[in-house]
Image 1: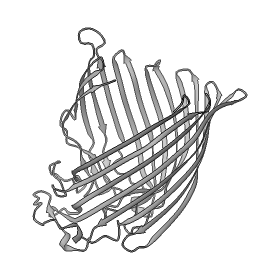
Image 2: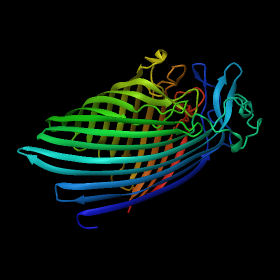
Image 3: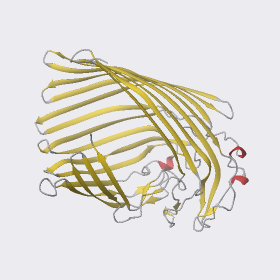
Image 4: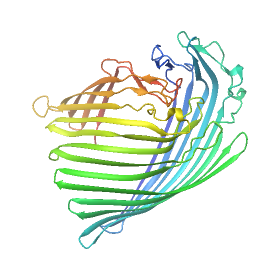
Length: 473
């Protein structure tokens, strides 16, 4: 708009219609011995998704040291499950997976407005970067669930070892009653005010301190009983961090922060969960092994959260909140260029993640589902720098993920896995052609779990080859 003012408009729309997939099932203390491609719902089940995101970003520079940033976003999404066969429970002695016909639709509209002012100034020899802002979000979320667990006519069991998906015909959507739980209209208004100052105390010592105030009003209406529940919550959220460089290539850092996030999830009675709150700290060291080319980072972290929403193992459309979860551990990363043309990205993490408090004392001390104690990855590429084959490159790497618990009850576990990946690419001028091979040795593995023995236990992709051509202009 001028030499000091810029406006960017953006819009994105997508529409998907894809098969529904609830993964495989647990069996005993492990995973059922069935083909990973076997579906536990019905093969013809589909999910429709529509997504729209539109808005603008405005930036105005009052001077070289002060600027204003204003951003607005509107997002609209709809999610429609046609009548699906949802896995509920497995009779392991008979191999019979009990399922129910369920239909669900979700409409979500969100309006977000962000405004902040950032300025740089000094008080004597001390330099400041000040950030002052506010943000406002309004969300309308309507969920209609048709789910009748006591109606035997809606049951559609299968034998997981020899399934007959057509034994019971699929009912019409209107023949399934709207469920008391899982059918809600939620209106959420959130306002945040924040102030942060980055203080360059010395050339090698930086302090960042900030404080945020959040207030949330949430109205949840059960669309069947017409019962309304109001929640009003607020919190002050501090943040502080420090960076010290004893020498030029070494940085020591530490930070502490609190978190406060409203929960849109509801329990099996349709009541909203309390907001998720938490706090954590991190200390670490970052160093340049090769100046401006290769760096490493080592950190210790400790994060505690309360009221974390997790999938309800007994209800596919409800959530439960654990009293308190703690994750602490060490992570290491190495990133950069070892030699001209030879790049590497490597990481390792050790995570001790467990339930530390809960009304259900049976799960206190249990590891969190889907969180491995050990994980590591490596990806390295080399591109020929000169000669007739200049621009030709090769990549090789691996992903390792350790054993993981499948649910909060620790009733089953999924194995560790090690995947090998490779690539070959060729770059010339503005063109790049690339071939990626993922899971090179076609390893069978479980990629993720989500606190259920019968749902969202997802096998990973088999050997996959991807080709791409790109042009930069």
